Length: 102
Image (cartoon, rainbow, N blue to C red; front, side, top):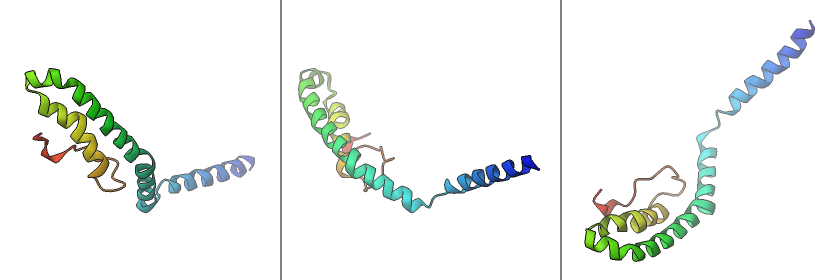
């Protein structure tokens, strides 16, 4: 009898936890939007600025080798597209810039 008293509340709690994982997608979308606005977009802006600086520094090496376009896409266009072109809350979108020829 004592085992039933302790086992039943434990199973009840586990079943409630299992149901709690099935949150509606609206709540996930709102969390993704907040994460995007407060963290990812500002970091994307910083990455774009740093990438532009690194791109300028690497120009003496990328111009003679013919890889300036790839460097521009990877260091400037991709972070710029991730910051400004994707829909708000779309944190999984990592397709990069569309005009880079990739």
